[in-house]
Amino acid sequence: MSEALDLQGRHVVLGLSGGIACYKSAELVRELQRHGATVQVVMSEAAAQFITPVTMQALSNRPVFSSQWDARQHNNMAHIELSREADALLVAPASADFIAKLAQGRGDDLLSLLCLARPIDRLPLLLAPAMNREMWAHPATQRNAAQVVADGAMLLGPAAGDQACGEVGDGRMLEATELCEELVAHLQPKLLAGQRVLITAGPTFEAIDPVRGITNLSSGKMGFAIARAAAESGAEVTLVAGPVALTTPRHVRRIDVQSALQMHEAVMPLAGQHEVFVATAAVADWRVQGCSEHKLKKDGSGRVPNFEMIENPDILASVARLPKPPYCVGFAAESHDLAKHAREKRLRKGIPLIVGNLGPATFGQDHNALLLIDGQGERELPHAGKLALARELVREIAARLPKP
Ligand code: CTP
Image 1: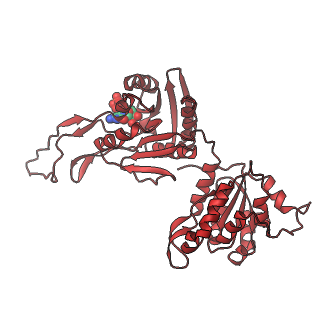
Image 2 (image 1 turned 90 degrees about the vertical axis):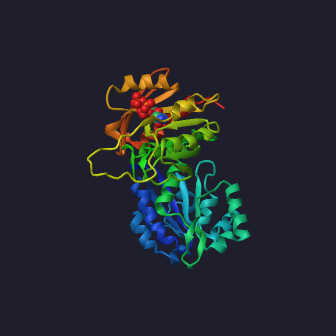
């Protein structure tokens, strides 16, 4: 999905404390740069045992700072100067020892001093723990981690999995792409904080027999982009997905379904527990009545099977008819007369906001163009990446929600 330049104009101070995960920090520099950020690397003495400052300087295209006695800053205060231009201070890897140091508010090297001297209200401190699972699970580390969070830092991970020591468990540093995604998310405005958002996405698959079925060309990309944008905005997101080959956005709860009936069954009990419902799924309008238990076989006569079709429940309209419905947003995928069809569909479904798009032009693509229609009027969101459009749609939805 296109997400380039999410960090355009952002300056990130990337701190490395000592740990084997330092090898991932080299890739992280590239990933941050790919998204448009400039990166200033600061390394602890221990980090330099795992990866050289030369590598990090070459990748970041800036001199690396390691010592609080470094005289290169004009006022000799690297611990102050380096943080003042930054939009984020990301320590990856954050070792057990480094987290312990932060928990105590100590500043005996440049990186810990930088963290301590950062403008706490303006400059977020994000820590990506990386250590052996026993070290992570140790009560002292857990206590220290809780303390640094209480003091305003944010933990990214750790993940579970294979560890360099050969053990398996919690303590792995997140991958560079995941850390970058976390940072991008952190910098988005929290317009949906405290809101629960339910989303349907993708096509449905209506079985004819155990090996065949009827489906459509929806890729699910728009719905997944909205799920990601809503989660970035601070919402608690549940995504009910038809059969698609997409990665679940971070911090999104995903429920996989196949058919329209299953999607209906998954959505209805959840809808009342959500403040917003966004129906992006291209739900099949009909299903085959009496799906065959066994594979249909040719009988040699040239006759083709006859299917009886029946209508699927309209999930969006059913949610909109609940006694206390969430704020409902529908999608209208049309092939022509977009505005007219979308307007009619909004009224027919009884929903406050509908988003029109041209189905054949957008299915499977990374880009789209949207037409938002509500009771007050219309607004076009011109051709752009689906994630950019999803973020704009989240802004539009947030602006329409009742103020708490
Ligand atoms: N939708 C739904 N359940 C269905 C059909 C559609 O929840 N059984 C939702 C879609 O997720 C979308 C909106 O309703 O948000 C419009 O879907 P669309 O298929 O474009 O419209 P239809 O109601 O099927 O109308 P038409 O067949 O006339 O295009």
